[in-house]
Amino acid sequence: MTVRIRIQQQDFDLAEEYQLLRQTDSVVGAVVTFAGLVRDFEVSAEGHDSLANSIDSLSLQHYPGMTESLLEKIVEQANERWNLIATTVIHRVGDLAPREQIVLVGVASQHRADAFEAAQFLMDYLKTQATFWKSVSRNGEQRWIESKASDQHAARRWERAADE
Amino acid sequence: MINLLFFGRLGDFAKDVPSTIEASTPAEIRELLAVEFPDLGKALHQPQVLVSVNKMIVDWDQPLFDGSEVAFLPPVTGG
Image (cartoon, rainbow over the protein chains, first blue to last red):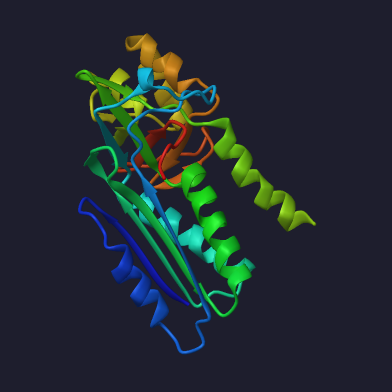
């Protein structure tokens, strides 16, 4: 499997990453890409979102060295569960404005089910295991984002699926 | 000497904490810090906080050696 893992401040080009995945091998029959964007509002821990929670900017901190090895492990787990030909994970760090791209997960496989499921798995595990921390700024006030139970729940479904 | 790192909101509580300490386990570091920095001590005691040594998640009683890098990690929020 071809693996590309990048943590970077600069933006990424979805089309370029798609082409790289597509051209990995002539047996690639499916490519799934997911791009996560900065919302201009913050969803509260209770799941409410409103203009009252609008943000000016978002900042992403990570643990250099550890984040990369955790992402490698998550990709390895995906590769053990599904038949994958190539995987790309790009996560941005630093200061980001609303509507900017934060994260890209791309998976190439022979058949679509592997790519679809692996992409979801990668995002669910990335969100709950990789050492990134978000803070948001609003009217000059900075606040750390709380982790969401719904993300933990989404990641746990893969444990159940593995037990079956 | 053990090198200390605090991530996410834990960093806000750790602004005046020295970057190195002498201790034999992460649990001992937590106790030592709680004496001088009670707010940080409280934050470190929350059950969701994980600890890593040399970038590997470990138990709080993991033995430490000179030069170990100990990081305190609140729940992650990337993606």
